Length: 79
Image 1 (cartoon, rainbow, N blue to C red):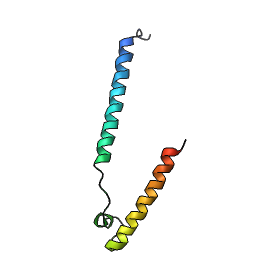
Image 2: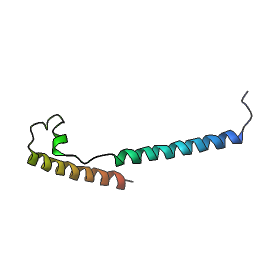
Image 3: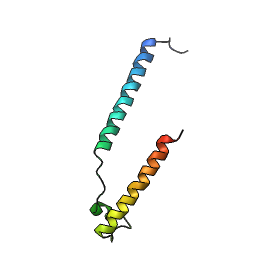
Image 4: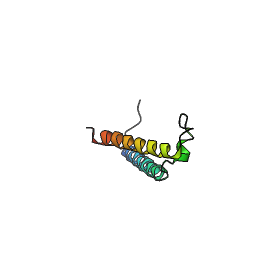
């Protein structure tokens, strides 16, 4: 037999869910704010980019940023 329905339980459960979602959003905001812009030095730490000169690495970073903007625009406008 199921226990009697308790509105207080559902209300408190909803508040906990709402608070945890708010905390997740705050964590994501904090994480995004800590992201640093890619540098030539950091790019060279990734496999396949080890031998790039500063000039070539900066061009590649610009291309990657253009690509990222296209992807973000596509994702955010997709309905």
